[in-house]
Length: 326
Length: 153
Image 1 (cartoon, rainbow over the protein chains, first blue to last red):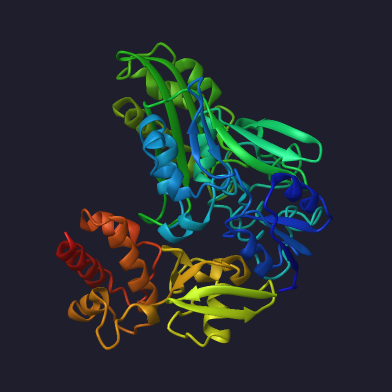
Image 2: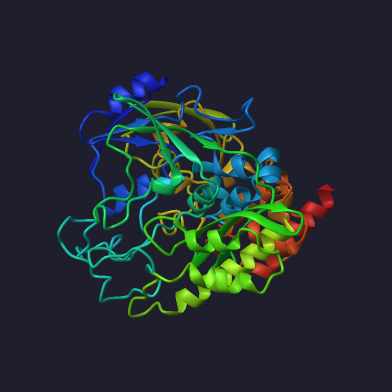
């Protein structure tokens, strides 16, 4: 691994000055960045350690009922916070189903959505065609091992999926990521934070070089929400598919539904047509299944992952039931 | 760069490169080889240590970022010749075979009990899932954690 210099700013102002240098990278929990440097995915010349920057950690309820989570708040601390457990169970569960107890003590809520794809070709030790690793080198997964890859929004340039569990929950909650840079503050909706390959196959998110995520804001409480993660083993594994569901109910009737699927596309995939059809349905209506299926009209399987369409549909139906009962 | 922290209660100062990981710093610089390295990418948990009282993977932390912090390793658990209750429980329940993952299992288990994630065997399994045991001593590990948690209750 190439060596790098190290800086430890104590303020946001210092951070965005230091992070603006070319080849500088921001270090928070480190659970992803250190592995990227090991594999050779990135070769920063300088790491800017933000873990001692004041004011970036903690959870607070704002006067308007919204909740602000400091970007440096550790995943375990977000998931186990009484306010998050009670008001946003979809977020709490999505975090507790992610990684391990040890990693969640290091990893931060601001860093987690910045994890990169788990595609084995992207993470290969040997050079392999991958447009995210080496722009314009192609996509080995398109005709390769793609059983875990995308069923929505892929192009021939990239068929990988964004693996973050919390990102799916944040997308269902219409959270906002607040960032700071030399250009000032930016408010980025979680729904458009991650980049689809049709927009840029080499990118993971719209975050710019030198831009710091400072906090994540949640809207009003959604106690009727749930997260269901399906994977090959019970714990400590990435999702094959997952579903984040946030419901607003009038008694037994669904007034509004928001659904984001994880690990099916390069961004958490909102089932817009399903959400539209669910509004007004009774929570035990048989029409829920057809509403879910309608959200998959534009799903396209790859050679090895046709099973994911059915799996994602069933996962969504079950997650809706869980949210109703939450 | 000069970095100072406390390891198992003792103040330590080391001159290290920024790229040195904490697990390597403990093993190669401080010669505390009880902390093991397995996958070296946060997948196996055998390098689990406590950083400011919380369990973390030593391979996912740069030593330089531990400046000013408290580190506990498997070497710090026993009180002289008196083993820590979790170490005793691992022996009593036959909770290891080859032993390579054991230091990480025990450091994780001590934290798991302190956190209170021991309400059931299922909860213990979930909160111990970051420690892989390729000899598959999982039932005995869960029994050891359960025994210590019950004794503390």
